[in-house]
Image 1 (tube, rainbow, N blue to C red):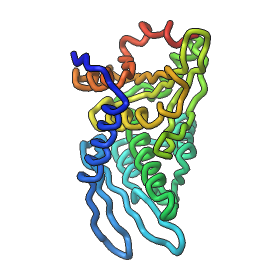
Image 2 (cartoon, rainbow, N blue to C red):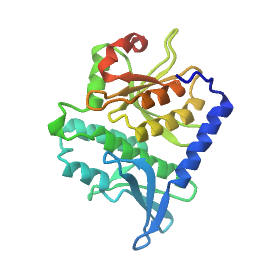
Image 3 (cartoon, one colour):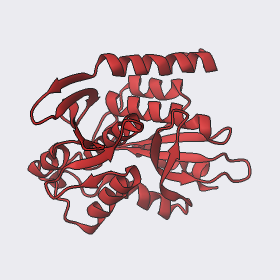
Image 4 (cartoon, rainbow, N blue to C red):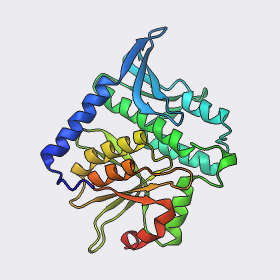
Length: 262
């Protein structure tokens, strides 16, 4: 196990390396009617690179996924017509300022000043919706998010759902549940990870590295990971350990109740 101590300089180095990786792995291509296709290194549930489209529209800049995320899920048998699924979808989109068009496009408008923020919000929404509904209805009894929410309530763990925080970079990041500081326990942020793969964990660690700089001292992040449908690799656990993030495998969730209940 890597026991090296993280310092501000080393964390900043990791952050700089992430930005460089993001820049080097992002590709641009002009398509048609003024649209530019942007291919990112973030992966969807098919391990394909996420793509979105950007176009200048008068004084606005329009960002859209072209309908890919929702259309792909529905083609795989994931229906969004239940009240619970629709509620979760709306919470994700509203929290990030994303709209859903009549053609199933995830969309947001921005300008030259907030280009990076709006782009980041769209990618977060694409990843979150893709992850939340990653498995078809025929393969799961209920959504992982809903399972986590029910578990918190059964164990009388008091939480506030879907809270957004502004990071050091100025980007907004949304976390599924927040448990307030209480006596000897620090503020605890909980994020569900239905598919704990490399891309989703890297995005979570980037979000946390940027956010924790603006949160109270000793704030802690817990990643609640679905290890029932997905195996958690040692590399994933090591990455969480390196950033002092507590990984909670769903199959071992009851071992962590005491850390969260107060």
